[in-house]
Image 1 (cartoon, rainbow, N blue to C red):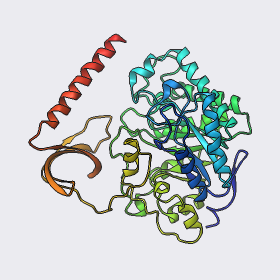
Image 2 (cartoon, one colour):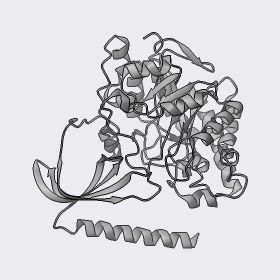
Image 3 (cartoon, rainbow, N blue to C red):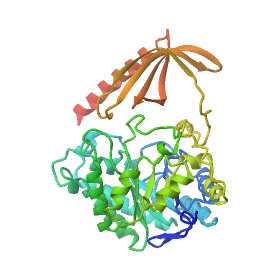
Image 4 (cartoon, one colour):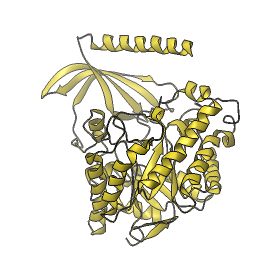
Length: 431
């Protein structure tokens, strides 16, 4: 146990243990991205719960870089006072907190990367540096550059979405150029002693995506460029059911651990591993074996903010989070992220007829659409529905679409899709 609860350092930041709260969108900021009492309470609860380092949800560094409603912002000096209240609340509880810096905007648009001018890129690079300076002024102990999961910096790394032919496209050194310029901008803004982290995909897991080999090369470049730690993740958010939602056994946990071992052979800086870790024994094994230096989790802390205190007190039961993703659905409804658990074995849909349709790239091989007709529970009653689910390696996604049978709902949805495609086509023509 001492391995996980020993003191350690990332640059000048001293951490009480090796547990990290990975960034996630909480849906609790104002429409303008300002910090709220609800966000402060969330971060304070994590500090009270014993998390060694709290990483906020991605804060957009430029007004054009907002990805979701009620997302935290860091694009203006006007946002600093509220963020300072957040850091003070964490520090009052002897916690440490990092601000994740991100740029979202249109998600997974090949045309966006292609159409950005060099001046556009320089504006984004400058915005990251300015945001980092604001984060330091607001009292954050570190910043993390968000370069994973298909957001802008991740898109530049991914050849599927970066087909530029200038110095920002082509080989991995060129595709990583924006990220390296962002790192230089951030480092110049905060100084050498201030901790700067990065969240990076080990792979994109799509056809013509970022490969492990190229990702390791990016890791080597980042280390040479002065990054202090890498948080290793993987996949793009538009790949349905890429990772198992359920973690029924320890074998299901830490799907990126092989990639982490490959990284550790090439880099010397601390590696933070995220992805499906739910068991203390798995966390301990990963750190003791040198696979990772820190263990990062998020959804378990949404259900159990005091999980780390529980483990440190000797109660080593697995995290009670069942990865149902209901927490994210609450945020999408505008209610802020919170745990509204499903029963682990609850079944609400009973298929009578089903057919699987193979999915095309960018979905990975083994992905299919499962179209079913059956009964689904709604308000304590069962109604006939048409249901569309994603299947990956024979595992069916919990998230799905349902259309009441005998209604024109599915026709209206199909028509809406046709209308949006026509609008998108018109927009592209205008470009």
